[in-house]
Length: 303
Image (tube, rainbow, N blue to C red; front, side, top):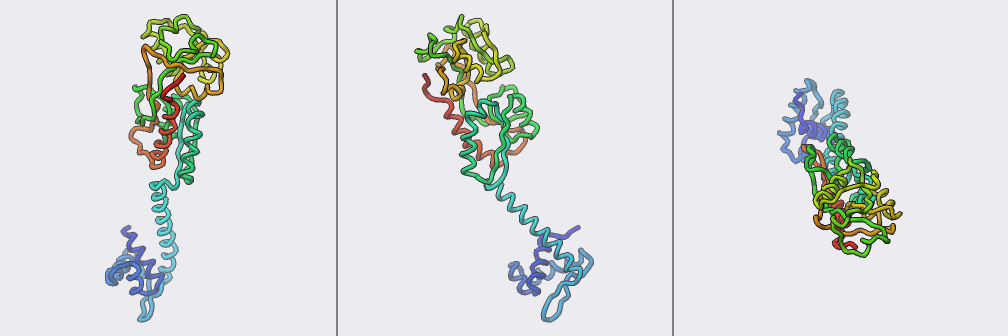
């Protein structure tokens, strides 16, 4: 089929005005060109669409039937074009983001609220899941983007840096470390240690810190959630080495965060999306808002 959108536009204009001259003015098209477009359309459809008289152009039965379908096609196309414009201009759309539970709790609520105030037509869906589920969701397309810290060895994802996060010592207020501005890894020797389980990327970094300081790592407790580790620290059951953003979860507990030195270990908090999949304008806009809130989680000075 060789029917063109231009032919449909010309047909609808003539059908509306019942006059080639007025239709050509509406189309900003020379009348001979308009007449040729109608002739070409009639030839393609193998039927007359208009009965032409000296005073008026009237639709034939076939023309009336074609007009109903052509009008709907044209309106649907206009709607489709407008929808794409709205997406490009961030007036509507949807973002699906996956994030680990603690980051989902301390970063995303305010970031989402801020973003929705700026772009009320865009909805944001959140899944608070583990790192492997975040990666699977992003790679499969179930999530448009993910938030967290990921191994450099992970493939199939592109990273957008948001902030840099360092490992810190968390202790209760009765701890000997409570008055210190910073603590070295070597000072942790012999301390009861609360760690995350070995499937956590944080745990792997903690092991690097202990190995570098040549201090044996003997966990007193191993837990899956950062909030659980902080609660155990508050209860005086040991110290914990956790990321800086854990300070947000500890702010209402009797727990202090101390800079760890010798070595200082940091990593990037990033937003990820699948390699080879285009990033929507909505996700691009959201990443700028998210970066601002992620950076607030890493204070310049901690005590």
